[in-house]
Structure formats: structure tokens, C-alpha cells
Image 1: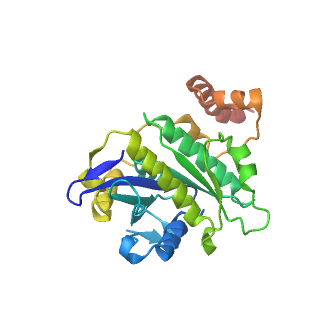
Image 2: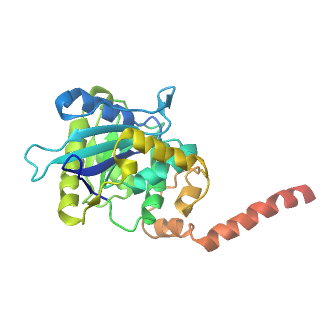
Length: 271
């Protein structure tokens, strides 16, 4: 949750950018570096990347609005989008004060975006507090991309969730997304008890050391039923059909499905 940094005499709010791989999370932070003067931000830090893909996180700190009632720093952290890096991603998402979900709205990538949002929804079920979300509908400059209203329906978002159209590669919608997230950050400061800034989140070096501890037991921890289905095709459902589809994530349904899967090889062999 939001913290107070006694050494610098400022409040710190973490804004975590989540979304599928290659959706534009890192690009958002790079473009923020372009329009925020260097006197009002840190350098962007990426501990490791492979072929342009974030392996651990991207980290950037930006000064809050000049007219904010208190001295404020916004820690912007983008997490790896690859499913196999979920053990690194999940603790960072759970530590967020505000979430920005970056969606690749192009036809080819939309299923991955839908699955990534289901994964995020599963993660949020385990967090015992409300984390405000801004959804960025990225790559609107590419032909056939789903528009914001269409994505709102596909993700079944409530009217209170801001949805921002963007083409992050050319800088469109990046500033607007950050502005929405900053508005949420100020609300977080006004409604939550503040805690001292924990050492693990104080700077990118400390955060990297903290993230490395996830490597010891990457597959431990709870797995939400939502995450078990992210590799499957997205199912279009409405009304009661949607409720039935979500009900399939119950433990009983999962257990029954596992039994069927276990029987299948024996049945095929018997034939």
C-alpha cells in the first residue's frame, strides 16, 4: 500500500503496469521518459531483458503533480507478461497501489490479452484490498484493433473503470493513462493508512534483490482457477452462460476435469 519515505520526506505510491507480453508496458515507461523532464524523474531501470522482452521488471520514478497536497513520488513498475514468468509478476502486482492493464487490442493478440486479464483477475481475488485499475487499449493505430467500447464489453468492465485508447509506440494515450493512474494514486493517499516504505521497494536495486528471492521456489504459492484456464481459447459468453463458464472454475469442477483427463489415456489404450 502507499508508503511514507522518511529519508526523502515524501509519500510513495506504486503504479504497476500489467498485461500480456509485447503489449506495450515497457513502451509506456519509455514514452513517459520522453515527456517528463529529467529533473522530475529518475532514469528507467530494466535489470534484464531478452530480445526486447522484460524478464524481471522495468522501474521508473516520477515526481507527483506540483499541485499535490503533499510531496509525492510515483513508482512505475512494469512486470513481465510471459505466462512462465508469472511467479515474478504476481508479487509485484499484489504490492501495487494502482494497476494499469495494458491490452494489445489487435486481432491476433486479443486472445492473449483476454487470458492475461483473467490471470490478473485471479491474482486480485487473493488481495484483501481494492486496487483501482486503469485499462489501456493499446495499438489503436493498427487496422482491425478492437476499440475501447468493444474491449470494455469483452472484459465485462464496470463503468467506473477508466478505459484509455492508445498507440503507445507513437506516444498517444500514454500521458492520459498516467494521468488517470495518478488521479487514483491521490485517492489512495486520501483513503488508506500509510506505512513506512519497506526496504525491498525503496529503489530498483533493492527491488531486484527482492525479486531474485522469488527464483528459489518459483512454482510455490496459490494458483487461482482463473490461471489454470489462461491457455485455453477465450469463450464468448453472456448472462447466465457467463455465470456457468465462471462456475467451471470451482474446485469440484476442476477435480472432475482432472479425473477425466487421467482416464483418457487408459481409455484410448484400451481401444
